[in-house]
Image 1 (cartoon, one colour):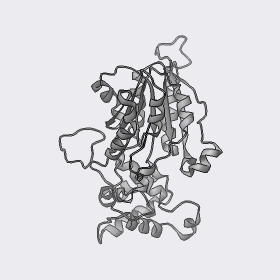
Image 2 (tube, one colour):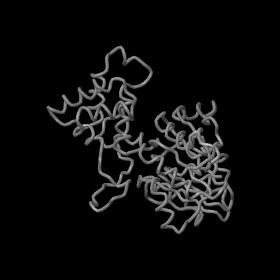
Image 3 (cartoon, rainbow, N blue to C red):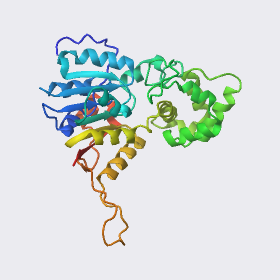
Image 4 (cartoon, helix red, strand yellow):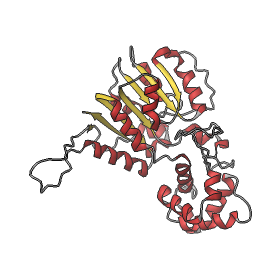
Length: 329
């Protein structure tokens, strides 16, 4: 690939890399979409295996688009990057004149770069403005209806959501058992002044959680930050539509590979794959099938594929990663 001129500040270790490549069963002449291109770790390895095929990278983070474009430049016309959300896969392919693909990859969740860039507001380990948008582009176009183009920030969630809405977000998306106490503490604090930074929010969360419960292995703000980030970026809402779009575009024998990092994401992927793989849904009391539903995919990974000991030693952040793979029939 030659010298990598990308700023060293953008670092992201590709999780389950070889497992993804094996799962996608890459054909040299195939068309592949990396729906969460990031720093182009997975994308570069896919492009490297193509001869007459094509790699389309998608990312909603403009910094990632710039980095990935530069890193994929050595592959010429074999690879390109589009600024969009992977739930808009159908529109992206249509605009590029692509009617069918041979593989779709999605590495869900926040990237190491986003976590390690304090000003993005994703991390509970650094004090920064409350933002958490994966799409870092400022949204000033009032006419934009794109799912990826929205201006909701963590500041908005923390300072404008009602106590009941905050409690729901923290409980549903963070599985935070102290959601009622945290929501109540946030609402009380913002009566005096807006909560502007991640540091202020972390302090409030710590105050709300009983001291005995703060002695566990996880940072007390971990679940709450995950929940607010998911709400800001509508992360769970886009998974199933994206997988359904990918299925429509896939050639028979084409593969979908999805990496998740928490149980909520994994549950959606698992259920979506199960629905796609199921056949007749008619009641068993009926003598013949009247629904006509047939399986659309074959699930390749009956159980999620997990990182091995070697990867865990090199990249501790991969510990919660799960890969599921399916093939279109």
